[in-house]
Image 1: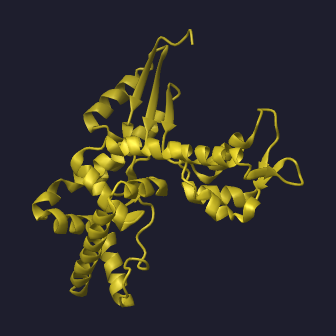
Image 2: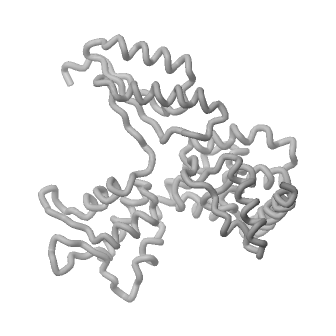
Image 3: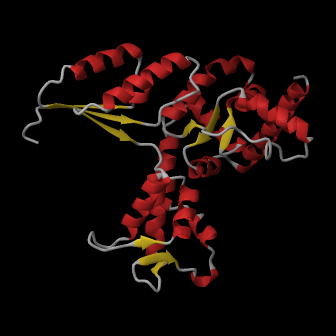
Length: 303
């Protein structure tokens, strides 16, 4: 752009500190001609910061900044349903002028499996196209799951593209030691997990002295795009693999939801992390997770 003299690219804006944010805001308000700002963020940690009022102030300032005409905002979080639907359509389309509609059942299943993770969605849809698992129906513009060879759509979308595994594995391998250990424990607990449960598992496995740094480790995993704050609280059902009385499940859920609740950025991340754990070690850590849950149940009895 010949009219653009300078561009500021600010990545991971969600981690900015207050003084840096104030400086950046003042710079933007100067409205220098030919100067443009591009902000790249993951979803903000709304509602779970220990400094909640400060966090709200930062989020409000960021929202005000990205609404200014000299600023562009790129959110690299997962796609919502409508954006995922549009991307699925684009992958299926063979040329830009082609009119394409996609069967709702196909969209729903791909969306449910990928949780809107862009790379997972694209690689999965390309694999389905290459294997002729997506075909045009009686209406040539409507594409749907072919159902060939007796396969179900649920089984097909569970396919894990090799390129995606390599991509995630590379990212996992770049996570430093302690957060990496925490990530493996989180994968064993589930797609969604309470920080309180992870702290208890960590205490059993590594000792109580190591717990102090865990909050920082969770932030590191969030910064690496592995986990994110969960929108929903943990349900009382499915907490245990063994039979537990309903009132204890309810108390246990309340105890866990008092702490931060996290979830993997996408289910595929958990699948890949689990594959990184040797079978024997996986069995040992699974027992540790059960022990932590039972210990927390004893605590919930005293509530």
